[in-house]
Image 1 (cartoon, one colour):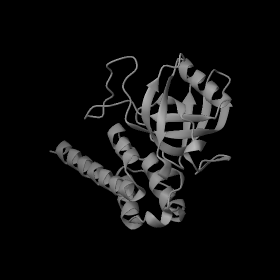
Image 2 (cartoon, helix red, strand yellow):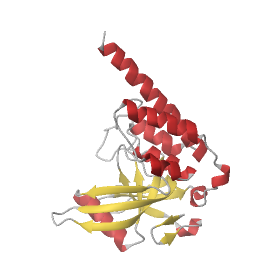
Image 3 (cartoon, helix red, strand yellow):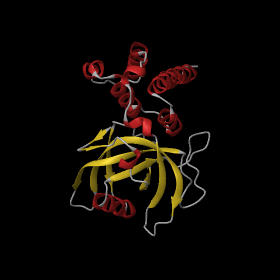
Image 4 (cartoon, helix red, strand yellow):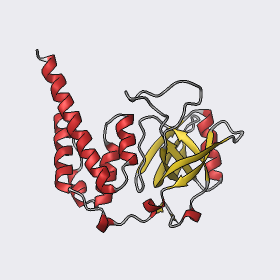
Length: 226
């Protein structure tokens, strides 16, 4: 996996300990790009330290309940089981105290142990999904036609559009991961897409979520007309 100018091929290429950025409703996937607008002091400190180190940050959702609501039981809510490591590939200061950052997805990870770092942000020892570093396109065949059809129908129903010419040219991996990241679904759906075991499963999950969303929207519209 290449992220910016760096290739990640082995476990040894991945930092064992990373700062983690809890972000509800966020989805970063291997090979994907995530723009961030950083303004909270603790996260400004996080990115200062990441830039001074290996430039790797863990994006992870706070733990949520069955309705997709974040469990606000403490100042530091529990974290979801799986997140994604990202490398800082672009960085700029705005002049008003914010950072504009772009992360390139490296691989997913599980939290092995949350650490007491003495910093204002959270950090953890992680176990990376090494299989994400060398995806096998040939073994990840997906039903492109069904995926594109369902997503086109969803966007049309919501009066949205996409650059379908670019979509058609994309590889299977890029197609699935980009559609998953740009999908307007909630935290639970985003986590399900992240935790899908392989590309085919992620594509099937995305199709299922899209079809459920369209059916729900249609049902709510019918009720509003009664």
